[in-house]
Image (cartoon, rainbow, N blue to C red; front, side, top):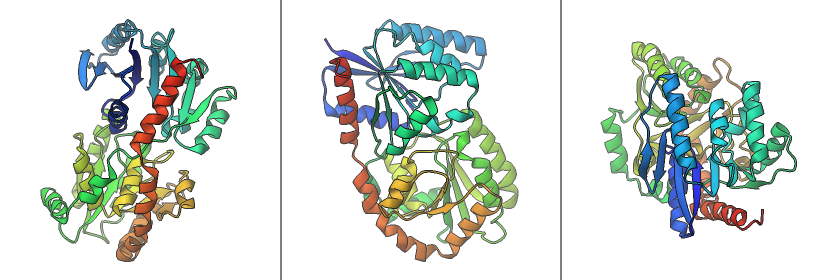
Length: 381
């Protein structure tokens, strides 16, 4: 009899979709994969059970309980939580899903490092879920030690399960100059414009307002900046705030920008990466941003926060710029430096392509998770 693996995660996330594709391609016929994404229960890309979204708090709570009861009735053999940063009430409700089956928790990066700033009650409930977990996985070696420090559960089995970048890097290689020109024409980007991409999702931790304020400081000096804000997934309320902030800050000054809201196909993401001159990644915390790695591969000049642990890339010889903190003028002066030395710095990005290519293999990602699933079901871990 086939075993059911329930993945709890955001189905709009390209990482979840890519993982599901890779797991399916691996061809383990003994396993059926399902996704619980908010109020949607999904199998093979189809919603097999869904409840309407609502802003009414009581109705949302009732609907959440309904869908969890519905999914629990399926008796999943393995429940796999991806990105451990749900509202507190969900951790309590989810417990019904893994009372009898095995539990895997995968930290992506930011979800681990932002735990210190969460309310105490949420920390207590999160720790109880971690104690219940049969396996915990993280996406970088450094996160293993950090996990033990944060949760103080030394007896917990922690495995390294790296993610590859969301898109096939060959797609980036295939992007033609004609496609880039067509893309720029679509958004009315002039030939001499500097294309600046700020962050990669609608997550408050990306520090959008800081980045926007810093770009505003440049508008007197550089009139040829075009800003993209990719916000195709994440916090909808935050995206609306950013849209309003751009209206207030960018529009009166004539700074050209576009907020990307619709989910993008791999080819569209690849063209954006190739069209981007400078990509800024100064989020609160992170393990190793795939969007940032795609940008490095595509030849963009990346500006990272120095507080983000990208020592792995540094050791491998990757080139990127950094700022030490989110101080006034620090990002704007760094962007100005990059623009003024754009062609010289572009030459330094050549080393990044080989380094990123070596790190990315979705088949390996899928096989690592399949090994964990198989060992759990066979009682080996």
